Image (cartoon, rainbow, N blue to C red; front, side, top):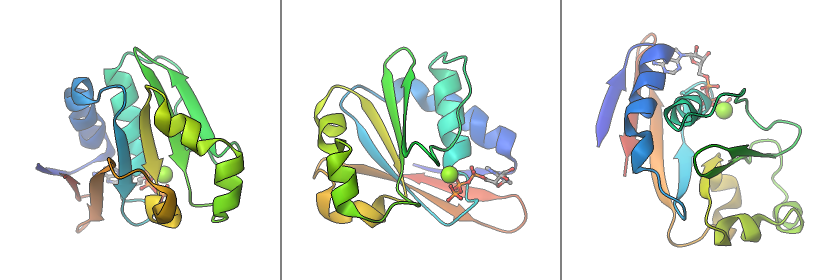
Length: 135
Ligand SMILES: Nc1ncnc2c1ncn2[C@@H]1O[C@H](COP(=O)(O)OP(=O)(O)OP(=O)(O)O)[C@@H](O)[C@H]1O
Ligand SMILES: [Mg+2]
């Protein structure tokens, strides 16, 4: 599935429109350069799941847990490239539980990602255009 958006609002609307297709047990890697829209997309997903609180990148906490309609785990690997640290944080428990898991910069922890992971690829096109490809 390939989608082009022309603004952050369009990325949010797109994510909202497909939020119901994300199910407990799903693990998604969100790949793409900085500012390609990964976190914006996650905000939209959470809005589509009727989550009312703030959604920000888990910069200091490394992992955010949102109690939306289902439990959503938001992991951003960008600032922690020590795999042992992720293991001691309990990342395997997040994978095994019936959560919806969304991982930004998944390539950093590629060696411990479950085989069932699905990927969403974000690309920056000209101006505010972004391509979002769900594999
Ligand atoms: N079509 C678009 N979709 C999403 N964001 C857009 C779009 N056009 C412009 N932007 C801008 O690009 C930035 C996207 O930021 P966002 O935090 O979502 O990126 P990210 O991929 O999570 O980056 P990082 O790797 O740093 O976490 C925002 O500043 C947003 O306003
Ligand atoms: Mg981000």
